[in-house]
Length: 329
View 1 (cartoon, one colour):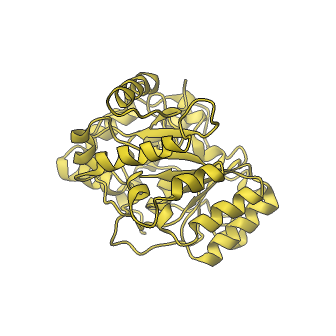
View 2 (cartoon, rainbow, N blue to C red; view 1 turned 60 degrees about the horizontal axis):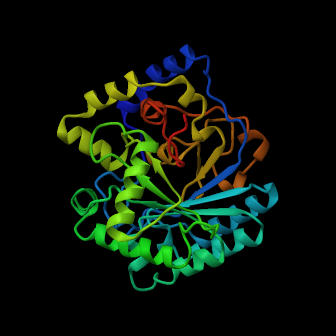
């Protein structure tokens, strides 16, 4: 994917913010999270999706790339494998990847849109997750059907509740089970997420009271000006105001703790990126370090310079945003 001139021209402002925070150049602090994006095939076409995933997409990680990733994970002993997509469950190598990683002693977390778990061919996944002690990170825009379906499509909320109940039934989100179920909240518009602690309390109260659903915790993630959300910002005339909101909310503490500093992101085709957002913009790891899994070099990648851009204000605004939610407590 080509990077638009707007993104190329807009790099300097974020670099200036880093410089003013004594963080420029932004460098990796080592790799503890090995993230794999299994592709852009998905059963949904969500309005906010930075991946641009959907049923019509064909990009899917082939077996040889999965095998290359597993060899790297085994060789380097990375503690955490973070699996994402699209709907990663729809990749034919998904279950094999999880079983192989677990056999290596790796802690596995998988990201899910929930609705895939109630479709034919996938209904046994909650039990599969539980057997392998996989941490489940589930996207749920809100605790009401109106807001959720507006962002993700008709019927999504009810399907999500069905999936959450299925996860609860095998122990996920149940105190004492050790099976972790995290929900992910994205704002349904061009604004920053609220306090993670506050919105988690709202979700916990409403989901338990109305649907009997429980969960371990909740992550708030800022909508990134990438993919379909970027299209929305441009079409609605909100791009400039949203970016100004992000820039004015820049937080040096959040910048110091961005996820790219301890993560490597592998695309469906094996290309290497600092994060999943850079991946969608075609911003591979900086020149001078390997940019494909076949050439993986832990030592060089662990001290690489992080490639940044205007979109990085999304991860550094307010309490910050990462794949595990706010980075400033």
